[in-house]
Image: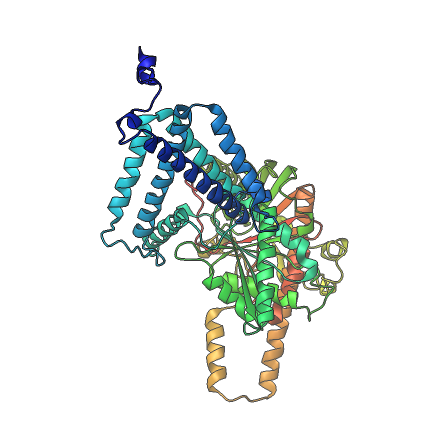
Length: 619
């Protein structure tokens, strides 16, 4: 009986509404028939146009073939697809099977419209200006909830399937779809959340125990530097594993008033983004246009970033052709300006040397990462090396720590303390303590200098043997000490400075601030007078400076010899970066010092901290 009443068999197969119609049942039948024809024609006219519009927006790539139109400007391909869908629904032959699907998708469209209206109102979008007088965002939320309630109360399994289809389409558009100027509501929600979060941490300072490297990668815009720039980005990926804040910045020579230079900057920024994408580095790019590059490096260091999301670590590529190109090379001075200003801005500085030999993200290296810890700066070199071993490229490498100890240190005790400290930091590394006194062999200084085959960097090598007696003083027990302020005799060990301070032989620009300020103030107040006393004092200063440079160069030769004996087979040498000179007059000697110090190693990473880094068990 249920089938008889369901299909109207008791009424002779006639419609109930038609039986109640007056004066004849044909009024309802004809009206229903014409209404169906009108609705179907409307759908056949609007649905192809809608499909063509979606295809033209390039939101869903596989719909691109339907964006083409015929000669009479009709979307013929989209019309064919619409007809096929309509015929499939007709051939099903049961309105009870089609109606739930159609109803659910209509309810979903209404639900999303209500959600969009509510988001535009809550985000206070300036382009959202509703005309309805009694509109309120709560009504839009209520409408969306009612739509969802009707969906799940009627056909809950169809509702879940419809939501899943909408979610898949949205993620596909997000992954494959092109970027459009009009954006979407979720992007506005993300921007509002980001703004709120930045305002919350604007005045908060990062704790030393929570220190993380937030990278600013300075790239060189010379044409032959493209490979090195790509290597820099691969190195940034290996250091951050593609996570965290990474900003790739460049200073372009040009004029901001010229449209040609602005377009070139946009093209450069796009190419940098492509390089970051190839290196799988997630971050931001910045291009600064300037007529004089060195003057704007400090501007980039100070202005890049926002609130607490400012870079604390600067990555600068080593200029490989600095000596062959001569002192007139712009890359030579730009590198020096970047290093000096990054140190002055209290940023951590990382300088990878031998970038062409550094691995890419698809490579894998096994061996050792050797750390020569000259300045005990809180463990920054160890932390940077540990971060590298977390990436799959360096995961098979072991860390070896060579700690430089003073002659008055207890090497055995220092080694035990370092092992205990590494154990508490949960870092697996081999430890070896090297006494600094073993770096000087007074009888073979000239031979050691020649053995490095660096005559172009060791112009003072001929003077090493003659000045040995002034610099090195042997003790009765056979140990060797230095005749400078950083190393003292056993009788004056109470006056030894902080052991974490940078040694004078390693800090290339060791200048007494008091003498500097006094001399500068005198120079400003007194007129310039040229006499014999001035000439004698200047010659004495030049002689003292020459001896200091010779001593530092000699120490670099001997330390390089020791490092090559112990770390010749290492895959990466990590070493402290000496303090850069305060004036351009010392650039040549400083670069020679670094070159001699790392001669013979294919991959070197110079690291210099700002003093704000502190590696603990929580880091």
